[in-house]
Image (cartoon, rainbow, N blue to C red; front, side):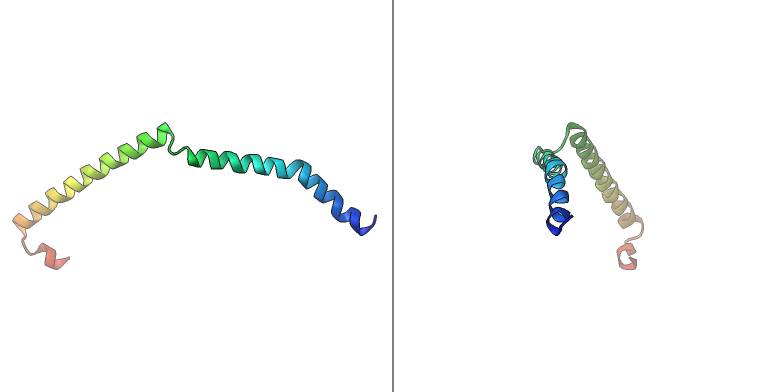
Length: 77
């Protein structure tokens, strides 16, 4: 086996088997990313946004209670 065969055989095998599979998987993942969120992910995002709004309302309520009962609380934090 000469030096050319040592390099050529793995290269040919790579080009026949690995490279096409690699390209197919690469462009499939690119396509999925460009399509945006799935319906499940979109529902999760809306749910998280709703939870964030509720938490913000609770924080405002707690701050109002603390302002009424302990006006100096912000200086302690």
